[in-house]
Amino acid sequence: MVEVERKYQMLMNSLLLLFFLFFCCHQSEKKIQEKIENETVIIEKFSKPDFKINQLQLREESSVNNFYPQNIRLLDNLRYSPVIAFTDKEKKEYLLAYQYEGDVKNSFSCFEVGYLKDDPKLEKDVTETKYNNFNTESGLKLGMTLEEITNLKGSDYKVEKKSDEEIIKYIVDNPDDPKIKQYEMPPYFMEFYLKDKKLHKILFGFEYP
Image (cartoon, rainbow, N blue to C red; front, side, top):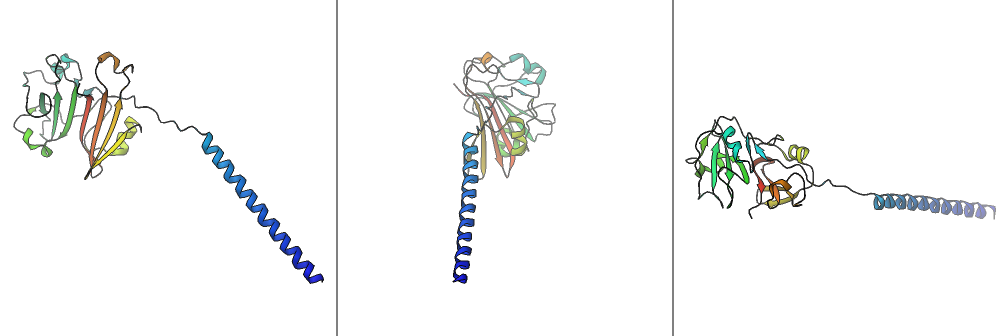
């Protein structure tokens, strides 16, 4: 009889211990869930647009005199709008300056930077400049990684994947944003084209109206 009572007491103690552990785990899980629900995840809206490639500035016609003070030729059949095509002095990179309908002479609404070897049809039309490479005022340049881009521009971007290419896109579509309001243009965008985890093309400026 004593032995039965002892075993019964051990069983009850085990059940109480299991119940206690279950209760503690449930309370802990509940607190974690409440913390998650109460936390506000803040993603900073993209507000770091660039407007320059070296000394050439979007929508600023006088800047071309600092960038390339000689006569330049507008090309009609390379992209969806007329462009002026430049290359660095080593002829490794190209820069296209897009002129939209309604832009005044030497005023550009979008820039594209890439490797000349990736678009060989440009070779006969590019104008050589004095620059070693092309970069924006925030330091963006070809060859960067996604981490280096997001360190400069933040995490508020969209991703599109095409075969072996990844496209990272930032947009400022608020017409009252103080950094783009002065231009009175359509939404501002930046697109970064990465292949093998390296940036091989940059496109940024104002969307085609």
